[in-house]
Image (cartoon, rainbow, N blue to C red; front, side, top):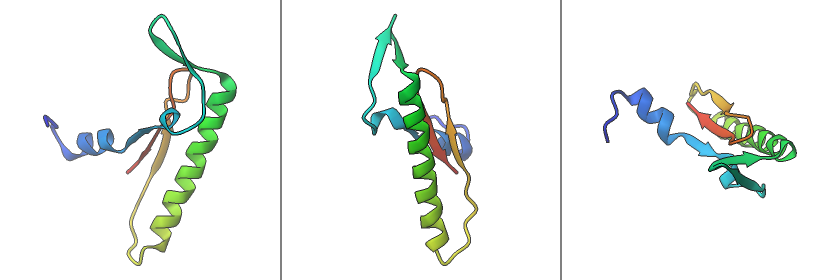
Length: 84
């Protein structure tokens, strides 16, 4: 797969583009995706719900597992959810 280390692999496989899972309108301007401000807010809220759900799953585990959730790329082209 060409990964130089496990962190790079994890960073890539744990990336979920939230616009692929939400009812938002993505347009294309000069070949670049564009998401309206209202839809960006919706995606950020969805990211918070997903993070809360991930934390609930981890809290239910009998083993303590350190986890970090990241909602990134929150601008007019995408919103990405990651967890590590």
